[in-house]
Length: 252
Ligand code: NAD
Image (tube, rainbow, N blue to C red; front, side, top):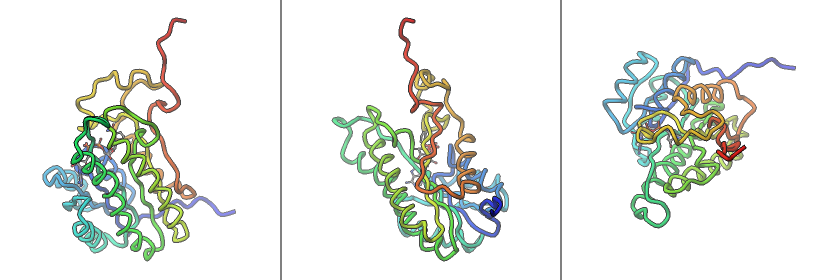
């Protein structure tokens, strides 16, 4: 029986989308500590430069709108030229919509699907051939508990996150033979700029009645990348137990 070897990231490159702040920034920091060179990719130039600067020679910032194929190609080229063959892509960039099924504008619905789902597909489409050539790699798609259940008022977001979960499985099946693992991550409420307007009541009924921290998501992503070497097409949930069930305040 062979011993556990993990996935060696040294001399290889990673791209983390939406990495200028929030969960993506925490993932970039965690991966950089694993020895992989990280491209902090985002549409927020100043914040992205700050995160990459804090990581020193292990990271660079590159502007990337995930819906733009030309920018994706440039970012992947720069990742490989700077740090070595591509090993990891984290599709984390995401936006949330408001309005629900009846009131959301068609433009907003399309935009959410474009960033959260099409953008991740585009990244996978362009990264997969490089990961094949490199002999294998890992793609992690940051979905949500909104990809496991429904929520009111955020129809486009829910649709995009269910789509990303399904896309993960399709890609895992196609790429497994090339040694490329593809997994989805499903966080519950996490303290980031995206959730700044939500109050604590959102998490109150969870078995663990609190918001998570970006570093907790990053730790799971780091585990998937370096340790979960027999997992692909899998869903990794970190939601304070919310999808196990919520506490009901009924008379005892
Ligand atoms: P955030 O808003 O703090 O960060 C999202 C980042 O994505 C920002 O830096 C933003 O500039 C970037 N981004 C937006 N559109 C982009 C585009 N077109 N191209 C490239 N980058 C773009 O949000 P966050 O909470 O850190 O969310 C990160 C991911 O985690 C998202 O996919 C989100 O849906 C998911 N998520 C978040 C939570 C939560 O509670 N915060 C829960 C579940 C899932």
